Amino acid sequence: VQEMLSALQERGIALAIFSNKPHKDVLNVVKHFFPTVDFKDVRGQMPDVPVKPDPAGALAVAEVLGVKPEEFLYLGDMAVDPICAANAGMHGVAVSMTCLTIAESTKMLTSVQ
Image (cartoon, rainbow, N blue to C red; front, top):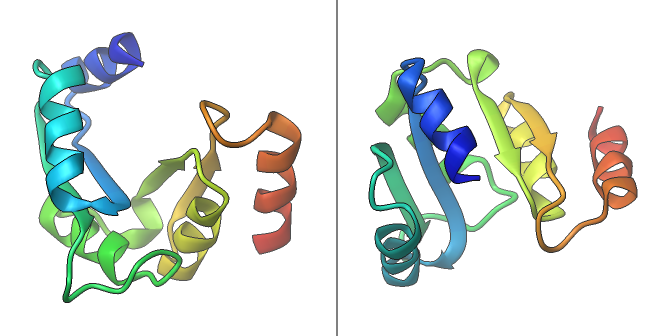
């Protein structure tokens, strides 16, 4: 993961993290595991923003990055992520890292197309 993030960053791709986990926890994880990655926006669950699959948070990230939703590539490892991406009008890519198998990821993507 670190190599991929570094390669994207070197190519000038704006990176962000958007999670349903508590904001403070997300900040701690990013600081610990990705200290060299320049994320343009890092946000966890906030009291005034509905959780995924509501698109509000994802759209807020796109706005911070200055990227139109239809040009946004949203990578996610949770079942809710491709649904959130679709709800936001973004390109969703499900990755198998922790919670989903490749078959489950494919099924989720197929169900929102």
